Length: 254
Ligand SMILES: NC(=O)c1ccc[n+]([C@@H]2O[C@H](COP(=O)([O-])OP(=O)(O)OC[C@H]3O[C@@H](n4cnc5c(N)ncnc54)[C@H](O)[C@@H]3O)[C@@H](O)[C@H]2O)c1
Image 1: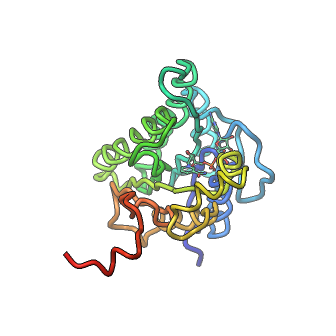
Image 2: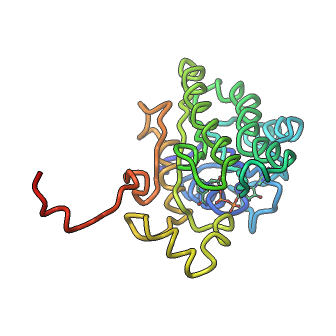
Image 3: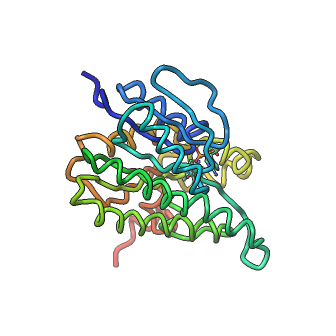
């Protein structure tokens, strides 16, 4: 028997990148998957359905949750993955863009939880919020992204408390640099790629499938005593204080 046989999962932002890998992973382990995205996924199947949904619209989120229950009768797992990046220092940050980033990265999680939790209470389950290592520390020129993902992390803890007695576990994943459309431009120029990959202890970008495997673990019964946890999967970059690696210092004695 597969790990998610008989279970139903909603994956937001499941048409591309990390979300698409998550949808494929859950389907391969027996789940029925409902993708909520503004873009159309490359393929659907008996196990993977899609309803065009703007994750920041209360009306569309409510309709998606209803469509999922209508199609598959229950919701066991919710992966809040839809997200948007934005680059600008604060004086140059457009107010509309600030609101849009918060609407998709942060408010959408509130909306999906608001409508899905009452359904999930029937049997319990798991919610995984895709935050970022950029929610744990700051990045240059990424204030709105840092703020929106920081909010996701603390909201995850609050949701974990509120949902615990309903048997719903809530955890967050903080990916590092993952190879998707979102980071394509970031590493497009060789010198930029070197600058971004250099400080990553594992020396490479992560793959969407490597995020999907952590998310599947957090959703599974193997993580049955985990809730309110903030898990990094970042090639080791947040293990580093930022201080330099100077090999000759190792031979110095105080
Ligand atoms: N790629 C990385 O390096 C990285 C690192 C840390 C965190 N993350 C986070 O992982 C998540 C997935 O990112 P990705 O790299 O796969 O990006 P991606 O751009 O490949 O995919 C994001 C998906 O979200 C969808 N989306 C955007 N706005 C939406 C909306 N309003 N409603 C519904 N869907 C919407 C997009 O259509 C797309 O399919 C995001 O939350 C992102 O912030 C990514």
